[in-house]
Picture 1: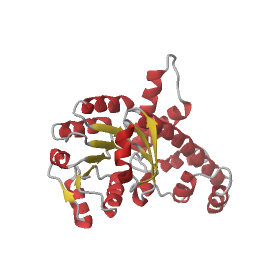
Picture 2 (picture 1 turned 60 degrees about the vertical axis):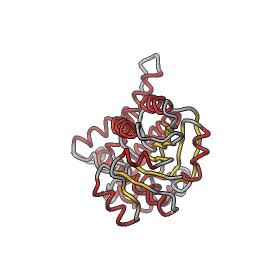
Picture 3 (picture 1 turned 30 degrees about the vertical axis):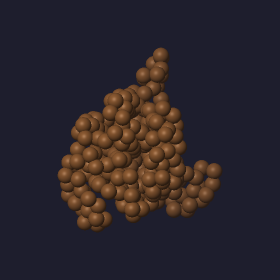
Picture 4 (picture 1 turned 135 degrees about the vertical axis):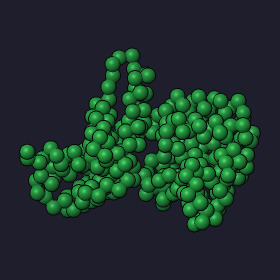
Length: 292
């Protein structure tokens, strides 16, 4: 099976590297040609001249795209060149409605689109330990699962088209709550003049321990917010969560954690921190304990 990969961003690059190491990657395409040429120089993978060329040569295509409009553009550019029975695995986080519409359009061409968002951060992308939640045609997933195992530690089929994205929305809401809890607790610990490294170590090994504290705790208290998952992207995802609840609710329902985190991210974006890691929420939490 010939495999093409589109989108060599922070997450996509690591996934593509692991596919290449496993001998499974044949073609790549990226909007920024400098990045795709860098990948070719480092790993020897063929760079397709166009999206259409990649589509015509691939039996399976993995996409890693940031936003709905970009994904629609990519799919439209591929559509006429796709081979019958091609499986497209989209690892992006986009809306359920976008996925359902694109999946329906591609089904008319006998092409399967799986919505397969991932969790695990840049670290997971780099070490091949991402968790993947998949919606769409289950036989299509079975057809490509062995390839996806090169970039994941767990793959779970969640149901029909869109179910992967709905599950990822659950993940993003939890991530927002964990970010709120960890940044606020560590800002409190700093105000209590506790040794922060020791706080992080002992709590990481107790009932309140979690991935975010273990992987972002030390860097955030040191004032380092190199992006693993950018504020801009998490804010976009939480906007999707807000839209999703409005579509299914018959009342004026709100998700408090989502709304609070969106407001906090907007403050950080206005201050120029949108490209930083979501742990930069610590900047705002520390302000609560600083005397005027």
